[in-house]
Length: 218
Image 1: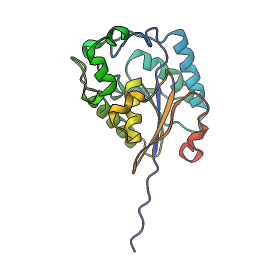
Image 2 (image 1 turned 120 degrees about the horizontal axis):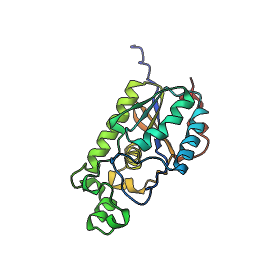
Image 3 (image 1 turned 120 degrees about the vertical axis):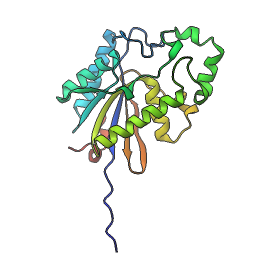
Image 4 (image 1 turned 60 degrees about the vertical axis):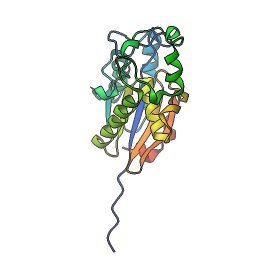
C-alpha cells in the first residue's frame, strides 16, 4: 500500500488595511501618490502592530507601494524585527479617471449603481476592471503563500482588494464583495492551503489568539 503523502500546512496571511488618511470616506484616492496617514491613522497602525507583535510568529511583512500602506506596514515590521517588502500585487485597484474624485460626486453617477450591484461587470474608465483587480490580488496571495509555505505573512493593502480576497475565500461571487466591511487598520486572516483558502477572521481589531495556536506556532 503506497504511503500517504503528508499534507502541507497552510500559509496564514494577515491582510491589514492601511490606517486612516485625511481623505478616508471622502475621496477615492486610488493609486495617486502623496497620500499619507493622518494622526489617527498612525495611531491605528501602531495598534495593529501591537496586536501582531503578540503573535507567536510572523515570517514576513509585505506592503503595497503606496505611502499610506507603507506607513502602516512600518511599525508592524519594526515590532517583529523584519523589513517590509514592497509588492505591486498588493496595490489598490486602478480607478483610472475616477482617481481622486469625491465619493459624493461619484455616487450621483449612473455607473455607481453598477459598481455597487454588479461590480464584476464594471471597468473603471481608463483603469482596471474589478474582476482584474480580484484576479491580480488573489494571484498575489497564492504567490506569497507559495513563497512562505506553512508560514505566517502580513500583507498591508487596501479595502477593495481585501474585500475581493474575502469573497474569493468564501466562494462568493464578486458581485457580493461590496457587502464586506474592511475598516482602516483592521486585520483579516486567510489560510491558504492545498484545499483552497479558508477565512479565519475578518475586520478584526481585538485579540488574534482565535486564529489558533497550531497555525501560528513558531
